[in-house]
Image 1 (cartoon, rainbow, N blue to C red):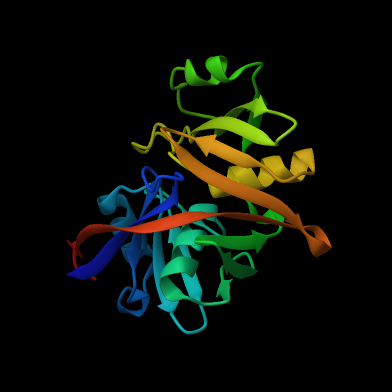
Image 2: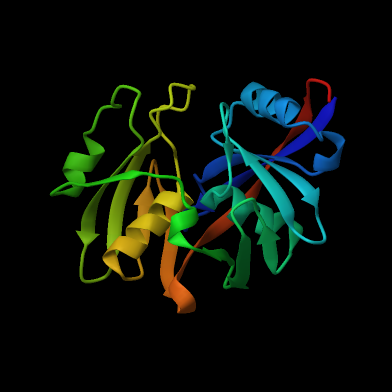
Length: 222
């Protein structure tokens, strides 16, 4: 039986919402990629992270159907949980910093998986969207207050893996920040909040609040 725990990443200012993340702290107990994929599928979170070396911050990220070299909410959640100043992902080394209860990670935009960033004319249009059919990973967004850098967004992975809408998506917010060239405050899903910014050397950061979920358990067998 493989033990796991659950975090909520990118919680709103009131501590609610956030995207649930499965964390297997003892990733070394699940060395085979096929077993990790099976566990991620059984857990059914948008992403599950396996911690291979907690001191060095080495992690491995899976959706229910595929492995990701980099993803935003697993990195923010793992950084908060492990208390490290960097993470080592398949894409590269991810910097970490913390301030005022917010955990931020910085990465290169090209590490983020491809996303279709689709702008709408109003917040109301974004909020009225129906879940599109599978096939395209869509990040729908509109300015809530352009002068203040405030964005309303929703995310539709389109993978056909049971995750019809992603509550909070760090990689997509990172890509939007890189495209617009400015810091953003993104309200996504039911009320999750992501804070982004530009960093030296072409890096982009994304961060938010993290909270543990009072739920742990075991799944399958390694």
